[in-house]
Image 1 (cartoon, rainbow, N blue to C red):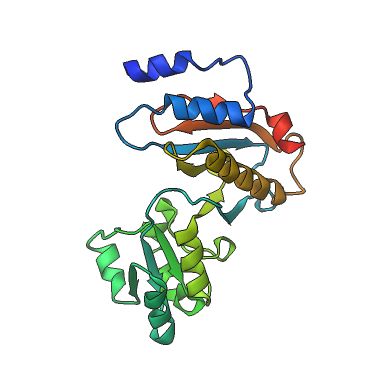
Image 2: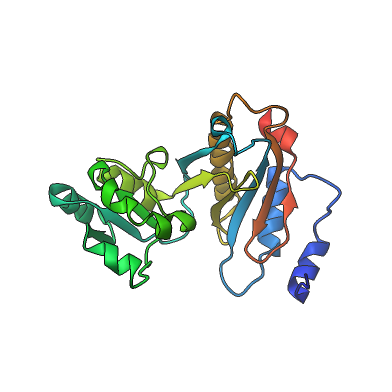
Length: 231
């Protein structure tokens, strides 16, 4: 894979043979985020889980103390008073069955998170083939299937992010923007790690966190010292 000059230069600053402390890694990632836009800082956690087994799945959500720096567009499936409540709480889009053809047939996907009241899941389920592959299906574990739509919307707007294993048993999560100061990124990072450690499946054998890498959208990855994270 051919890399651009900027990436090659940034990669020279990262020593691949060592694992960095969190503060050093964050400083390096910020320094290497030299694109013309405000790059997203991401965490990639390779776990020892085997996601093929239900008891080793990881999925949940956590509110980052300083948010992600991204404006999130929220679609809420609700009716009646709950629809009114969602609008009052600041949902970007609110609707019910009438949104099905718009999403299915017209390919409308101008939203980042979908919230639904439990009674609407029968309707939302019809969109499984569209929303599922994009990671947009509401889920009770992530707090996006709920009667408390106000709390769900407030949490998401405040910086709530979802985490889940991909098919390679890796968790990929944004923790802020390169423009954030180092302390804010450190706070967000620690909040995420604490959440991931809390949901460690008891069935996991061996190392739970195999590797943790910090990176920015266009920058090289920086590996962290996992031993220091779990102690």
